[in-house]
Length: 395
Image 1 (cartoon, rainbow, N blue to C red):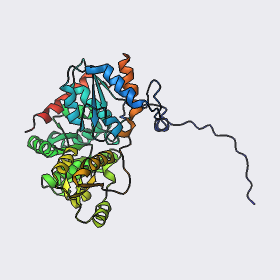
Image 2 (image 1 turned 120 degrees about the vertical axis):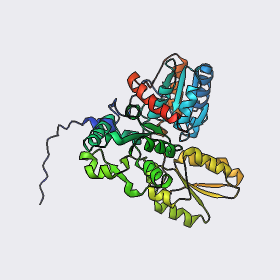
Image 3 (image 1 turned 120 degrees about the horizontal axis):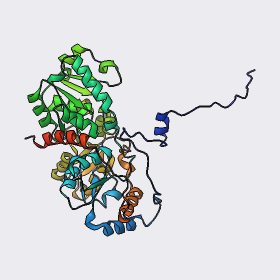
Image 4 (image 1 turned 90 degrees about the vertical axis):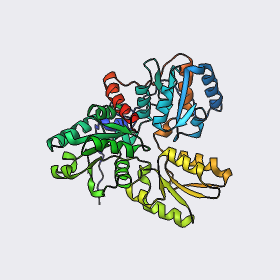
């Protein structure tokens, strides 16, 4: 018979990482933040919409609200403009009279807006916990160590960094400092073409899938031209010979939303909906992109559906909030729009921006209290802006 004894309680102290994941601490070097001073309105408050309208009206031209395509409808309702991250940052820079830029998106987007707007403007993120898992996958320390590895392999001078817009200000600054450029999912091909005119190799950060898909689909490279650098392994898990042989050095990062789509998803929707057009974002895995009918950025997806004929059927591989919005928008035009996967897949961090956070932000600003300001330090801003300007100069 088993004898059970009463053990003394263990004195277990949670690690800093555990506290961060529990939402009890903050890491200032990470995209993830957890602090939200003040009391949020209850999400069940029936007056939230009226409160948001009243606060926005009180602020008038002092506030400009940006709404990313992946935001909830309840937030998009109050956006002055909608779009992808870079478009929204440019829209903010074009409104110098707005004292407050409220960015309903995620942390790296607000950073980009702060970089591009004037010193007099204050960029606000309604919830500091709205980060980006992809951007978190490349830290400044990891990328600096990677550059040391490339230097030791004798290829750093021949390598041009190209960083996706979905990266932190620190990574954008690294890119600018070492002669590289930023890209979006719309202009990644142009950015890579420019980079290969400057050097022999590209270090692509932080989304491996966009880098691989652009290199293979748009530039005609082979998959063997690409190697995957894993920052959690010594030397990225690669030999010096592998690095010297590669043309594309891809960072081991990905989007948690787009990375979920699979070839099975594509095959399943084709079986369920005969004649369906499969349209996916280039952040999807290479095999998913190869199995799709159309591939393009968020703006491309919207324009493709706008131009689609009545009666056409579409399965979209991107964030669910946008897909639902498009399905509702085009239903009256007899266009069937469905989510590519059967599994619900919201961007969890983007969805942290909800109506209570927006109301709290607007009411605080209307009362003269600045909350959740996103500020990029001057040195980081200088190099990051240099990388962004190189992108803007692309043909």
